[in-house]
Every structure is written in C-alpha cells, then in structure tokens.
Image (tube, rainbow, N blue to C red; front, top):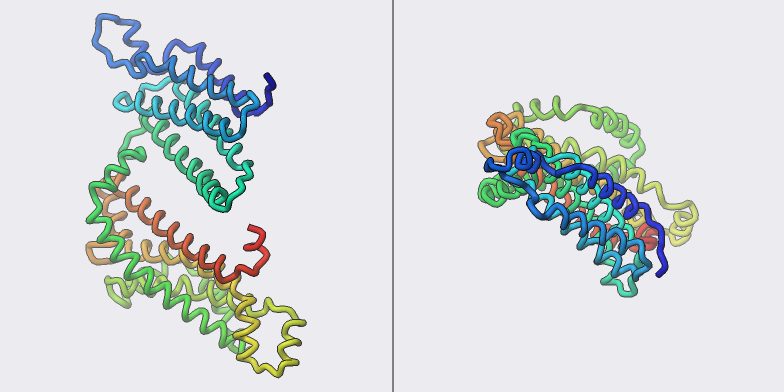
Length: 383
C-alpha cells in the first residue's frame, strides 16, 4: 500500500491525538462524572468517540493513494459528518464546550480544506463538469464559514443578542419573508435600480462627450476626483433633506455614487484602442462616430463593465446608508437601524444576508454579461 503526504490530514490526526488527552468535550460530561446521582444533560453522550473515529478514518484514507474523486468524497463525508454531529451535539448546551470540541472542529475544517484542494486539482473532461467544480469549491468554502460560525458561537456561549448563529438568522429569514420582501421592493427595485441606471447612463453619456470635446474632459475629471472623495455619510442627509424621505432621494444618492466611476472608466476605455487600429479606420475614411462605434467602444467594453460591477456594490451601499437619514417605514436601511435599536440582531443579520444575496446576484449577472460581450478579450479567453 503506497502512501502520500498531505499536511492537512496529518495536522487533523495531530489534533485528534491532542484531543484524546482531555477527559471530556463539554463541562456537562465533567459534571456528570463528578456527581453521578445528579440529573445533568450530557452533550455528545456516546458520540464523542464516533466523531473521533470518523475523522481519523477520513484522515488516514486521505493519505492512501486512492483516486482523487474517491479521496474527495471520503473527506467530504468525514468532515461534514463530524461537523454535523458537533453542531447538533452542542445545541441546547451552549457555552459548555471544552478544548476537545474545538480541536475536533479544527480537524474537520482541515479535512474539508484537503477536500477542496483535491477538487480544485481535478481535470474534468466535460465542460459541464468543469462548471460544476467551479461552483462546488466556493460553495464548500461558504458552507464551512457558516459551520464554523455556528459551532464557535454555540460552543463558546456567545450571547445570541451579540452574534446570532446562522441557524437563528435562517429562522428569522423564513419567518420574516413579507417584511423582507417589502424592504427589498423599496430599496432595490425603486432606489437602487433607478439610481443605478440613471447614474451609469449619465456617466457613460458624459464620458462620450468628454472624449469628443477636450475642454469637457479637462473640466469634468477634476470634479469627478473631488466628488468621489466626498463621504456618503455627509452627502446622503443633504440629498434626503432636499428631495424628501421617499425613494427619489435615495436614488439621487446612488446617482452621485455611480456617475463618476462610470465617467472615469469609460474615458480610460475609450483611449485603450491602439494607434494602428485608429490609423486603419482613418484609411477607411471613417469619421469620429464611426470609429467610436466600430472600434473604440468595443475596445472600451472591459473598462465599462468594470465600472458597472463596481457600481453594482456602490449603489446598494449608497441606498441603504441613505435610508438611515430618513425614509418611509420600510426599506433595508430603515429596518437595520430600527432593529439595532430594538436589539433584534437576528433581523439585522437577515437584512444583511438578503442584501449580500441580491448584490451577489447583481454582480454575477454583470459578470456573465461581460463574458458574453467581451469574449474576445484575453482575460475571458484565458478563463
């Protein structure tokens, strides 16, 4: 039997050996041993050894020269199975975890790390399998962020009012769907989309005019640099006082935040085409607008999409922050500021999770559109 070296399984085995020197994983088990006649809840009653055996088996099999697909599957079963038993065992006994609990949690994490490394090095034949792997590895990382969050918060006994675990946030999400939908409708579908479209459109139009007329470029770029340095915390209340508390003032904040990134990136992109290509267009007797449409705008598309992706996050941040300074009794920023005052931190995290999901979908859609439009660019062809 041939073996191979991988530091993650070796470190996981070392952590398991270290955990075996401790008498118990939780304080409840110690209390039960000290006073056998008392009624004491014992977390991990009978499962502590099973967790250790599962992790040890996964680590040892990972060191054997198995096929990479089989190794990844074994590691995933061992790491997720142990993590599930750790989290379910500590639920209801928060704050009672001792050092072995965290050592075994770290061992599970190292096995999952090894699984992600193995999956990243696979060379699938079909395009669908490659796409699946591209999605699977980030999904594994995100899942383990949530697992570690849940286990550490419950194991260390962090008060839920300070940092709720993901399970509590998920329950709040499910129970507050109508409220969250109303907030998304107010913030995203009114303020963000209107401001984003207007800001990016105005920035693009101004960039084309600035490229055509040099005096506009010399005048707008310094103003753009100055406005981009203005703190949103100061601009937002001014615009809210000027335009009212409804979504129009938040859209105005989004316009201010998205206009100049689009302006600067588009101007830079319109200068990206080479002299040889421009000379070729001149030999064809092309005028400015023909050269712009057929050469310079296609060459500027990577810069334009960079601005669109940057603005997708700026728009969401701008609208939410602007709602802190006055809004109808609905909206993501309003909900966050209100629920913080009520100490409903799980609702605050639910709003943050929804905002992160919407922002990720928005950014991902723009990235897919960029790949379709700029398929000729080396960065896309190399991907």
